Length: 429
Image (cartoon, rainbow, N blue to C red; front, side, top):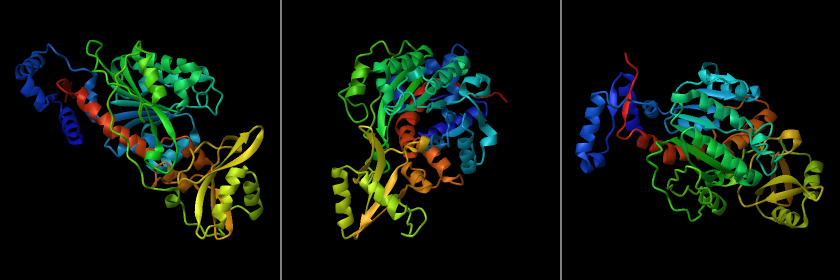
């Protein structure tokens, strides 16, 4: 698929008009393929926006530190535009990629003009989750932060005939239930109104890295209203669990394009494998008093688990989150080899703690920026920002191999479908 797109894009760049037919198309309807070709040659069928599809270019809105870009680039996609409102995230983005001045526009999406956005194959939007998250305000798409989604919709609307053939949206699973599902429904109908048929699925980063991080994804594809795709049966599975399958089934007014997808992989990587090898006297480790305070914050059940770890003959590792339970700050220990979901450390909260215990001892510290990068599948990310800034950047990002999987099993096949039997025209020379 990647080779076919590359060849097609090269021909288009040289000014050719290209029509791609599958061998099965020719075997099934040779006369129809010939007729389509003749109609294109006669000018009766004109190329449309799909001519940009084989270029596999994308505009990333709410780009953050660029992890979505990393995932797409691993599957041969090329960034053409990026936007984010956070100057510190742009700093991290540029420190890693080194090309922000070429295509990164800093600013509020509500102030962005469609004229600033080039014609691309794909537009992505990982818009703020603050008002959708179960841990947030739950103000929904009208909230101060998550209302940025409507800025994205406005830009798509204003692009008119240049509208990207595909859009990819990412957010927390709380999006599905925000305001009883009304926010999710409103968002999908807005995409329908722009000509996009939509699909939705949930992926957990734990399938790819040792981090529990469920996220809801929506793919929108420009489709002719007269040719709806064949519906896929929904029984409820990992990608479309019962709540999502029920939502899809109970909203026939939404123009769906549900695709069959393979089961995601199962990673064998465990938490201890991504840890930096810091000596016990490294400054990152907390003082004995602070570590003891953490231990005393654990409930009896979690404290019992910690004591067993301490009494063990070898080092074991767990991840700790502080949560407020019945008005009291409690430390909850996870020891299944998977870290909890990385979060942005706003107001001192959300910082995940590493607990190391064994041989009669125990230690505690925050996860390092490099460890957070590894949990996000961005092992080689260049980190030069201060620790808090880096933790914020990674906690507000997407898991790289998750995006890579979506590109391989969803976006790339979709591009090939969109250009199948359709006239594509490159720029005239």
